[in-house]
Length: 406
Ligand SMILES: [Ca+2]
Ligand SMILES: [Ca+2]
Ligand SMILES: [Ca+2]
Image (cartoon, rainbow, N blue to C red; front, side, top):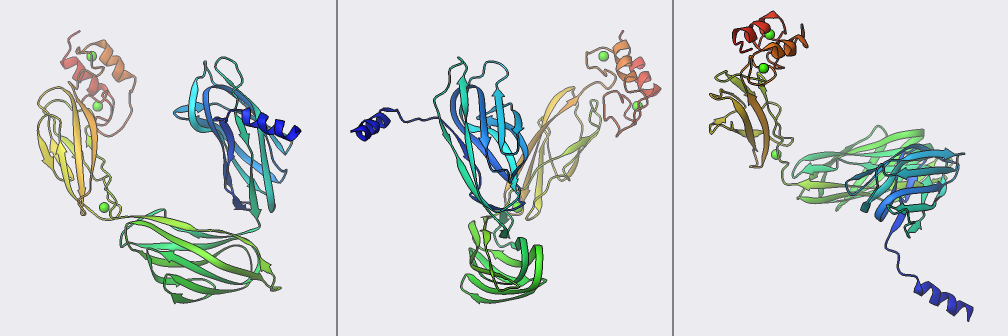
């Protein structure tokens, strides 16, 4: 009877939509930094006061502020002994933060192997000062002594060659390793290793044997070269691992696999600069796009719109403006696969003698020049360099004096 009442009581509690949970990797290895997010799904948030408990062999490296939707959540964190962290978070004005994100970001590492349980609990209040009813969710991480990790670029383009490294972390007296490397959407080219690394090839698979001798610490086991096949995902995974030490005992390792996103083509990146930075009307301005690039090919076209109705082509172009004003200059670059990128910047064309841009040549312009007296730079790098010679001196004062309006 009691249990029926209890079940009815539990059913009567409305499902709790709001939560704070510990979000971290399920597995890791001794000494390797990992990130813990204090995830939050919350409404009308104003303040929080909570503690996180963990084993004393977890070392907290850093605790950083949070972000929910577009709001930064300030943090005041302190360690209580070695097994507890106290966190207080108050929004500076009346907070009213709703949505999903994280309250805090914690960087940590483990000093020994085992399962580390993290417990979180506390009070979260809304902008009326009322406690928000939410669920606190704990988490755990399994720490291994040794890790065998596949390291690959996150992105690559179709038909390009990628290097994939197999790294062993924190190993003790390893003698030999047997494992299989599975791969999808990749074509194996070759492998190299500082160790005695032998393999046999099957479809989408390498069966490997590595003879280390007696090695400890962090090791680069092998570097594999693959060709990327089709756009989409490529995978490299390690299976059926047996690592043995010099006493022929097995070493337990955490395996971390990798994926590569393959693109048909990477779009180029557009950028440009110009000289002088503050030109006068009818002064020749050099526009230079040599800081644009294409990571997997070449830029084959540069098209400029100068913002005054005229157009230009090429990496470096000259243009002068006949009228004063602010112009939006647009550069479009095209790569050898037809992908484009665009960048727009605004350039101010103004009387060089009117340093403070108020329409008059008077003592305020002299003061603006004096504030940079004797500074050096690219010609016209600041408006105070009125004569565009790269130094702020009496010649710039003279430019103002010639146009004096008082
Ligand atoms: Ca490209
Ligand atoms: Ca002025
Ligand atoms: Ca000057």
